[in-house]
Length: 201
Image (cartoon, helix red, strand yellow):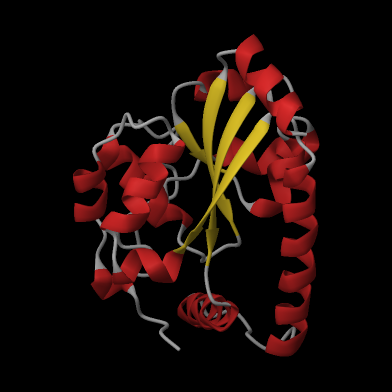
């Protein structure tokens, strides 16, 4: 697989930076870090900042239609970063090279953050138990990670949301190395706001 990845990298320059992970895992924070570091985000700014994401969501609505075959926009993402939740990664077209930054966060914090969002929106929080959701997330993440390992056009870096909040410079340097040492790591670290770490466990 390593040989295939190397072969693909030498045959194309269509590199796209993807920020992925479960919802509420720190993907918006990483998008903001990349923007500060020098990579422009692909976003339509339709979903604006709110109490759940005071710094903005950095979303591009057409991403949500990847599983419906809407992939024409992907060409516009070259040289940029775009947020794609983990469940939609497998629908990205295979004729581009992707550098995937996959955010990880403690499951109990993701569940707490999602529940708080539902409460603010006045939506029910008891449709599925935390135990069932945690089990689903674990199975889903395992399947996604296995899929990522088999893709010759994908390089992936796993970053801990919790570690970013505790010591932002170290993960910023790691991301910079992953993307070819072309970013401003100090600027990336400077935009991390520890006050947004609200679902500590």
